[in-house]
Image (cartoon, rainbow, N blue to C red; front, side, top):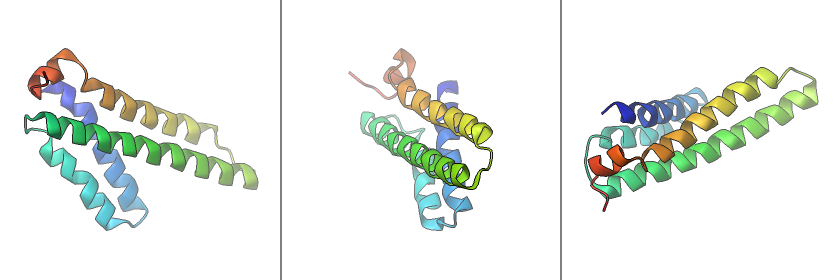
Length: 110
């Protein structure tokens, strides 16, 4: 299903973020929902949505922390904020995709 590409990509970005910062365990744990994407059960969909919600909080926190550090040292931060804003938007759209008619049918929501 093509609509699952965005959640897949969002979770992959989260895993790469954790791996970049040396958190191997978190990187591995954030890959688990990717393995669950093909399973058609409402609980799986809600678990992935919850993971993506936590991911969006991680991205917002990361954007805030990096922006404050860059502002304090006088480094440019606009490009970084635009990129992280796009990642946050992608993650939120990934959450909302689970409310579309096709994914609700795929995961057998009532």
